[in-house]
Amino acid sequence: MYVTILQGQVAQENWGELQRQYEIACKATPEGLLQTFLVQDDEQKTHWQIITFWKNEEAYHKAHEEKKTETCVLLFCNAGTVPERRHFHVRRGHQRV
Image 1 (cartoon, rainbow, N blue to C red):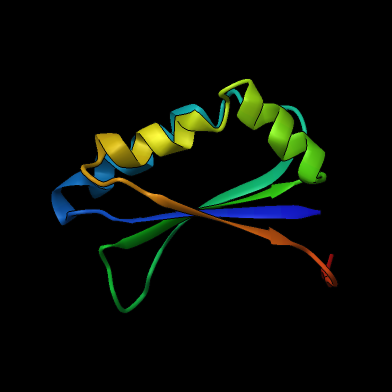
Image 2 (image 1 turned 180 degrees about the horizontal axis):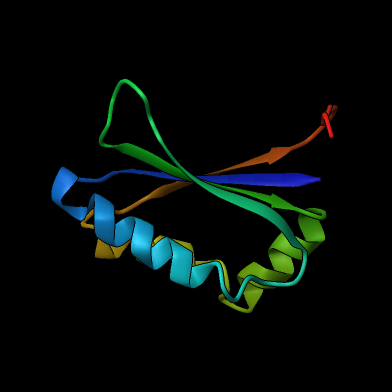
């Protein structure tokens, strides 16, 4: 599994629009995307992240080459910030069902 975290500072007046646009974007997700979450920092309220879980690194790179990962970047840009993306390999995991 491969994880990307896109993060940026979003002014309070843009929170609603970011959430609305995220919901719209989730209606057409790229192949290989397993889960995605829009999260807001509990203490630093202007800090937002989009966390995506991909089947594998190849699935992410394929979506990136097809410019499908740009959708989330545009969400942040439209909310007034230029986001930063971090990449992670999942080495171990646990999920309670």
